[in-house]
Image 1: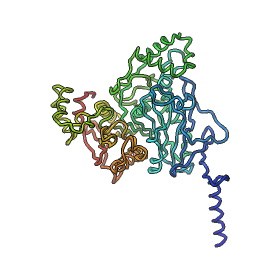
Image 2: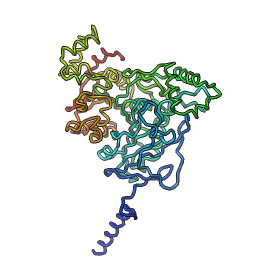
Image 3: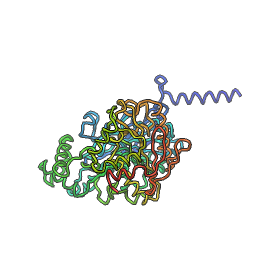
Image 4: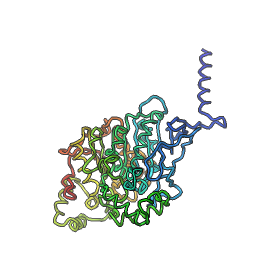
Length: 519
């Protein structure tokens, strides 16, 4: 017995030694071997965390390549610089054209033989801005709660990600879509490396909100991405990208003209400073297709271009490419989205709200009010003036079309819970579902959800649904939500997320068709 006790004590001391540094008992950084070299991370709140892992490299306007390998151990404990973006959403010191190609990983286990579902988060900001570094999208809570591997990614944006130079030589054949090809490269990295992080490369869910939802939808139309992911979640992503080959060609020709460059001088674009390049790009847009007006359903500006090779079609036209018929899809919106709401008008009367509706809808006003009441019984005067009219109609259109074509289920949702932030003036605004789906109330309470009990309760339900969908392709969670049936055009099954979650059937279809008859 003493011998066994001695052996046990030695084993315990060995474990302690292996997880301690010789310089004073500091916990060793966890290490993982990737296809490019070894990396080290950290342990944050019990979760193995790796930030800024290189997944690719690329020259300007060129498709991504495998990253350079390295010797020794690369420390991955800090977020990398973000992609170049010209709208003031990031400072020059945080952007880098070469160092942006990174992923971040959160997981409960490393190379432990488990097959954890993988969730790849794709940030919003249209195709022009954003990054994977937003605290409300940190993966600690989802990794801890659902025992999944959460990955987030940076990729090229704006003119560096989507300038169509294809008519200037074969080397530029893919330039109009390199920002999306970066995302494909990140999926390839996951496929080759995620087992080392305890993940299952055969069970990958891509999800994103706003522009991130649009990118998820775009990946559903890219042959190179097929088989690298298996489920898709589109959160408030149904803005229509109208970019096509004719428009992208005109934009580039205008840009070359403004810069005074001839076709044989196209390589000079490689060295033009980014700020000048993006400024010239905006001038070219204004001269040709114009700039998008916020609040409209159509996306202008630099974005993916269907070329029949890298991208078969624009998503939401009215659905996705046939190559993705076997991918379960979850799609939804928030009640107010980008709408300027009336919730700050605390004393607004119903009579005043009705008068404004009459000014907006004219002879359709009475029908609008009637249908609104059927869709949302017990509505307030502020609700009447604040409902989203941009994302929701197109979400219905896409769900109708894809649920008929797809061999896999489609699940629809709508978030109607209103945030208490800013004196409850923003309603169920664009992006509110991010903090709830990530179960990140503590990190998102100030700007997003507040810290009330109902926020935590709803986050518990939404994150459970997201996790279960990632694991199984079905968001139903027993004793958490009412039964959530797959969407059909005939019944319009939709989960309403609110203080009391419920399922509805075509609850607002007539109203949306009155507002915007897109189907």
